[in-house]
Length: 394
Ligand SMILES: *Cc1c(COP(=O)(O)O)cnc(C)c1O
Image (cartoon, rainbow, N blue to C red):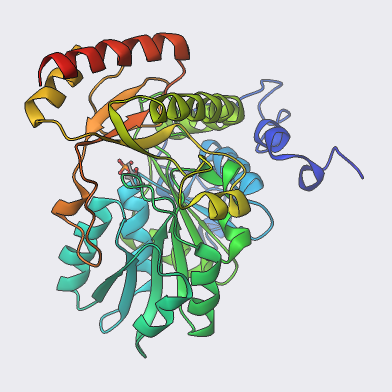
């Protein structure tokens, strides 16, 4: 085995070696940040033929190429193209607009990221695409929801609030038998921990704003597509005119280089905190597919090679104002929505406010936690203070 060839390397190595062109960069390890709109053609003949590796700022630069090559190497052999868009939500909207047309029907998992649901119910509905939401635990039972015009199934595993784990392999098998595409929002695990394109998914999307960026300082989205879907995605990106700012592309590439060490730590610290929380008297339930007791554990073990740092807890019944007091007491856990950075977060959520296919009744206040890169003893001490404030406020 020739370990100098990227296809023979382990993912951690590919993240470091891919997308590098030292010679073109005059010896420097990293590509420069190409700020550019105009690309000049050397001759009139080149101009007429649109000849050249780069032709227009919106269509890519050496900076975007380095990022795309690195993410493609991580996604694996099924990936034939990576689209770059300005946000995770743009990855979702661009993908759906690229593959759907008026009169189509789409099946969407009920624990989908809420703004994705808003896009389906808003713009897709306006353009005459019908959406049906389905139970995340439906498995092969999804077969009965297909219609003759069902074009795609949109999944997310696990859902980023309630953490139910859809069986993507089973869903993909049914969808492909029905001639439909499978689209996965793979933001939670990233392709490092979940190679969804190898497991029947046709298009795998990332809110690279989260773990790929990894430092809470960019908005960025990616669309990884297989041979069947890349032509549609590439055309959609071109027609819609989406692209991303060069500084964000550069920071996302920088994030990819260290993704493996950051995610390994999020995995370890996340599981340690989840186990610690499961033993706390204030906590009724921990929703983390990496825990042996979690209903999604078997699927997680089969399909994923790790867990990131995001999971939820259900507290024993407590008034909202006591939970607010707890949140106000926490010093290391900040209150904010976008996760995947180096810092820990805690935020209340209520899936029941928007789910439609399934009722979600947790039986107590719910908090979503992101376990950052802080020392876990410090995080436990912070939560200890928070729980003490919760009890005192009841
Ligand atoms: C944050 C998030 C998105 C949207 O990403 P933005 O970059 O904020 O637009 C999409 N899906 C999931 C699962 C997310 O957590």
